[in-house]
Length: 212
Image 1 (cartoon, helix red, strand yellow):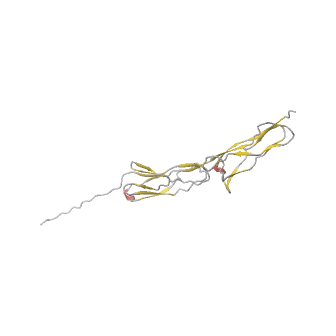
Image 2 (cartoon, one colour):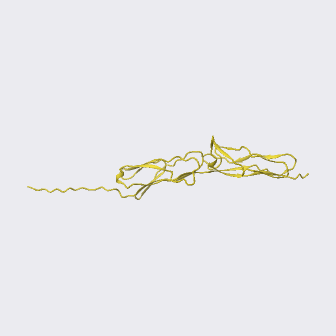
Image 3 (cartoon, one colour):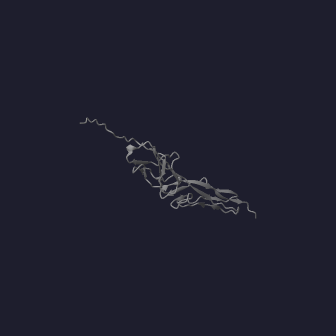
């Protein structure tokens, strides 16, 4: 008894309009002979900003949707070039990605800076009266440090040459030329001199006229 006309209903789900961004953090270390990575990420979802703890890779969005981050960065160990940038790289996986805006990604920078060390020559403070003999200095000192400290020669590294000699017999001032000496620092067979910022201080002595 009815002529039925049917009209469907329904609904549409559109992409979430909230912005989504993923950033890896920037970090720097003083050279300590170790390899460094820094897996700290910040996820911004709309007005919500979450910075994870180091190593945290999974961040939750709406419901059970997640962003999972995988580091692709190469660990840094040696002093990095001045133009090093954006090397804290990563990849991500976004569950139900079709429902979200494409995330913006920003890579931080990992750098290693030179380790300060001071090399100091031997200075004989008291003048030496001329006696016809040859006098000399050849030793030098340098500050030492551990991997936890940020200056000084590391226990795993060695420095050459072992001596910088200066001799003198006649009246005059004699400079132990530390500043003009090319020092080499090695870790085993590897030359790591470029990982140190070396300050050099000359030593020396003075021979004066005999007062007798």
